[in-house]
Every structure is written in structure tokens, then in C-alpha cells.
Amino acid sequence: MEAYDGLIERGIPMADSLYDLQVDYVRHHGHFMVLSSPRGLKPEELSSFQMTMLSTNPVPKLLQVQLEAREGEIQLYYTITGKRILRHWLRLEKLSLYQFYSMLYQIASGLDDSRVYMLQPERYVLKDEFIYYGDSLDDLYFTYVPVEQLEGKATISEDLQHLASRWIHRVTELHGSGYQELMSYLTAEHFNLPELTQLLLKQMRLAAEVWKEQDEVPIRGARLERNAKVDSEVQFVEQHISPGETLFPLSAEGDGKALPEVKPNQLKRKSILMGATAILACCFVWKLYADTPGTRMLYICSAVTMLLVCAVFFLLRKQREQVFEENNSHMVVAEPYENMKINEADADDFLREIGLGQSNSSREVRSNSKTSMQTTPLLSSNATVLLGRLAQAGSPTNPYFEYSREGVRQTVIIHKSPFVIGRTELGVDWVWEEEGVSRLHAEIVKEGDSISIKDLGSRNGTFLNGELLVPYRVHPLKEGDIIKLITTDFVYKMR
Image (tube, rainbow, N blue to C red; front, side, top):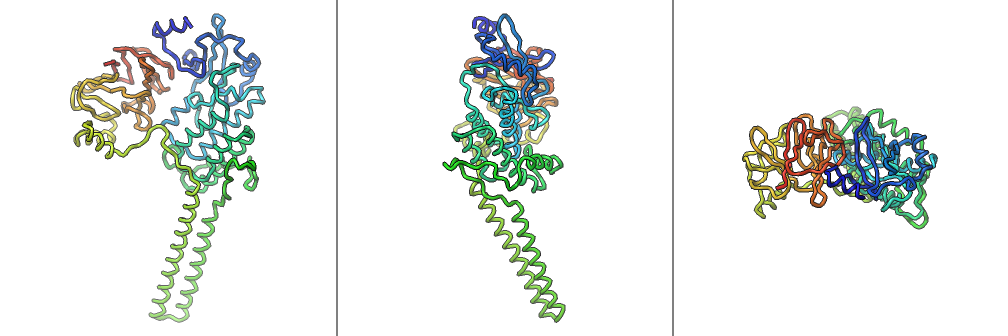
């Protein structure tokens, strides 16, 4: 403990924590996440058998871990080179319902398969800040801690409940009662991993069927054309589950409601049948006109045709409304994940009432800044920037960054923790649109009276007093420190 306190006094970067362990990041011939103990992790606190299995057998979906001993104390080095933290991805992007179930399935199947390697599922860290991804969300990697006692570690079902409740808020379109069924099972007494994987596979199949029927699929907040990857994913699920198979029988105690029978093509078949019937009726009507032509018969046949078209249109609309109401009767309504969108006009009215409102001119400047690729320069040398808006002149009461743009001194108030800086408005607290800035570039964190900065795995890095920061590592800030993003220097000031 004395050695650890000495590191703090000398200004060595403090680490995050995981249960009763300290988390740090280093970069030396690769990028590593390091777990250690402030009191010193002793060899007897580790499971030697599990360490042997981890070091001799590359376990799928697990971060590779190496053990390093220094002065009788153990540190665990996890290789994260080329990988990103999942929580940062979720801050920016949305999920399809299929992706939601697929990610949980990767976790559940990985936990279940860990027994093949004589590992304990309870030693998995099921927190999205310790889950990493590679090229895509199909390429997840998990942290396994081979420590005998983890202080404050929740059960597997509790960790999965927490993850599911967080991730569901990122889902763009919800249908069916699969989420309620999942959460009900995670709280059931008979919870086990094999049944959970079967439940998730079933929900993946249902989501994939809806996905496959759509010409366009909602992914990453946009509408992307469906391609062969969708068909391959549907085929993967169908290999594990046959459509008529009963995969997850709920207990008699009523732990949850079974899903209604899914008939994805029923509406389409009825629509085709009604359309074909209407066409045949129209053909019969105009055959009568062909047999007995005349002006009066022409009017009659035209009127009957119009009535048939209107009747079909009315019936189709009624049927779609009925299906929509049935789907809404068991739909889950999600709350925002982290950043709630507030009506801007209502917010401005409220601010004006309490004396903090903005003028029309400043609102116009802010509106123009959203369509420009450059940050709008401030109008006053003493103005401050708060969440991309122009604030009133005056000395900031919170810590802030000071920088110069086009010869004008500007400030950025650090008004919350964490305070994220990046290129995109989605998921960040202050937008810096200089070329080379990553979507999530750096984060300012306040703990007590200390304020620190960490790079969020940005492509071009973040510099502190001329030194390139190790991604995800926490670095304390002091008065006068210079933070460099691409070509701009930001001076950190306390008051």
C-alpha cells in the first residue's frame, strides 16, 4: 500500500478499479490492460490450474493473459492490441434487435463452453467496459480473472440482467415479447447457461426472420441494404433451431409469457389473395361490358371497378392496423441509453425564464455550426464554449480548457464527469471538428478533487505536455497542463 501511495504522490497516473483490483493500461510492443492489487497480488491468490489452462490453451473469445511477477507480486497482462472497448462503441451506435440477442448469445455460449477448458464462468467480467471487440460485433472478447476471491462480484444472472437492461436502450426497433421473456428467465431460480443459449438462439431466429423480410435493415442508426451477410446469419440460426421446434419450455410456475405464434408471411399472403380476387372480379365486370357495350354499361363497370379498388384498399389498411395493435400490445418501450434528447425550443424557453437564455443571434450561430465542418469561432474574447454552444461572458467557475483560434481566446468549460471530446455530436459532450479527430477522442474524468484525462483509443492519439498518452490509461491533470489534439493546444486551468 505504501508503494501505491508513493506512486500517487509522484504524480504517476492512477488506475481505474475492478472489484478489489486496480486497472491500468500500458503500451510496450503491443497494447495491454494490466490488473494488479494495491496491496500486492500474491501467487496463492491465483488459481494455478486456471492460469496453466489460460497460458497453454488459447480459449476462444477470451483476451490472452500473461502473468508477470515483480518482487513477489503478480500482475495480469491482457493483450488488447487492435481491439476497442465495447462501451465506447455503444455510446455512438445503435443496435438491431438481432445484434442485441447475438451479443448476449456470444456471452452465454462463451460462458457455457468455458467448462471445456476447466474454467469457471463466475470468473468472467461481464461489464461492457471490460468487453472488447475486433472487426465487428461478431468478434467479441472477454476478460477472465483467475483470482480465487473477487470482492463484490455479482452472480452471472445479475451481471447479464445489468448488461441486457443497458443494451436494450440502444435497440432501434423492438417487436415481440422476447425481452420480457429473457429478463424473466434471468431472474428465475432454475437459471442455467444451456437453456439461456437456447432461448437466445430462438430470439435470434425470430429477429432474423423479421430482418430477412425487410428490404432494408436498421443498423448503426442508418438504413442499409440487406446483403448476403443477413442471409448467412439467418442460415446460421436455422442450423441450430428448426422453425417448429419447442426450444424453451417455461416452468409451470409461470416465469414468463410464451411468445405468440409467429406467422411472418401471413399478412403478405392475405394481401396477395385479396388483390387476386379483386383482379378476377374486375375481369368479370369488364367481360360484361365487352358482351353488351354501351355508354350506360361503361359507367356502371367503371363505378363497380372503383368500388372494388376502394374495398380492397380499406380491407388491407384495416388488417395492417390490426397487426400493428397486436404487436404494440406486447412491445417494450425503451428509455434513452445515456444521452436524452430534449426539445430545444422548450429548453431555451426555460433558460430564458431563469435568466440564462440565449439571444436569437447566438441561437442562429449555434444552428449554423451544426451544418459547418468547422467549429464556429466565438464573438467575444472572453466567451466560453459549453457543449458546443456560446455561453455568456465571464470567468468560469468550473475547470476549463483555454485555447486560441484565429487569434481569439476561447474556453471550454468542463461542467460534468465524464466529459467526452470528439468529432461527432452523438455521444460526446463537446464537439471538436478538426480533421483527424476521432468520433470519440478523449475523456475528462473527475473523482473527488482530482481531474484526469484518458485517450479513448483515438486514431491519431492525444498528447499531454508533449507525451503521447497510452489509450484508456488515466492521467491526472494539474494547472497549466497542455493537451494537444491534432494541431491545437488546450491549456488546462482550474479557475
